[in-house]
Length: 84
Image (cartoon, rainbow, N blue to C red):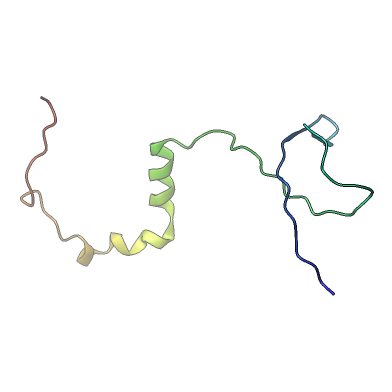
């Protein structure tokens, strides 16, 4: 008989020995085997230039480099000037 899964969210710290130290006690009585998912913070935000370089290098966008996709000219649209 397979039982459902109960989720408990808490925070903690991974120390120098790579051990997980929880910030608070868990509401569990006795010894029980558990599954643990670790969510690590991103090292740093990726700036816009890095996003653009990654998109430029991604082969998923290669179709945009085909001549038939180059449908706009300098005469299309109106100039944008946000200097007010």
